[in-house]
Amino acid sequence: MLLLHFAPNSRASRTLWLLEELGLEYKLNRMDFHPKDLKSDQHRKRHPLGRVPVLEDGDVRIFESGAIAEYILERHGSGGLKPAVDDPRFPEYLQWFHYCEGMVMPPVNTIVVHTLLLPPERQDATIREQARRLLAKAWQPVEQALEGRDYLIGDFSAADTMLGHACIMSKRLGVINDDDYPNLSAYADRLLARPACAKAFAA
Image 1: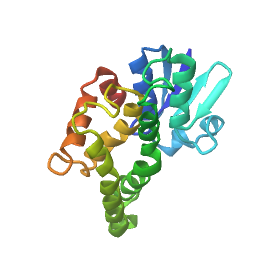
Image 2 (image 1 turned 120 degrees about the vertical axis):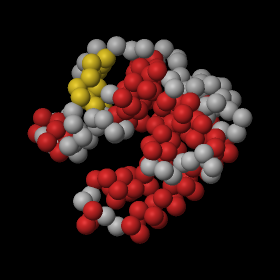
Image 3 (image 1 turned 90 degrees about the horizontal axis):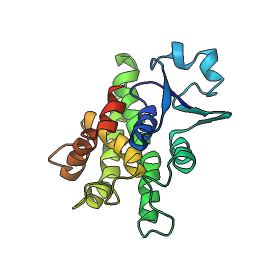
């Protein structure tokens, strides 16, 4: 059975969401998002940097949320939640699947660090606002792509668990709102209405 090492408010929610969408059986090792758990000697044996998610599947141990998603889809997905290679939507699927880590999550990380993780005296408002502007720009192409669509490639796919997770986080951080990003704001709400997504974010 799959074993997911998980901490709330982290990229591990993407993995849990995907497992739920696919209806796979798994066990969850829930840890606190705190150095006492993540930086422990035990967890560093799973991930050398002490981060989550980490997935174990028999003798296989793999980290990095995008790699885990691709592994699950190929080994356990039975062809679900991704278009076939010869499907016309496949290139766009790949684009949005990887867009989150390439363009969106770096400024999200900076905002989180300078809003939630660092003590107030170490937070830098200038760095935080630069990241907010960069994030706002990164979301503009996605806002346009969602015009007339419920999901990124039309039908729900694993790209939505990747980029959609970042969208929900961005809305909670106040970067995405109804006025400036109506499509993205509605998209985030639509995703959270999915039982698998709601369960992942509530875990």
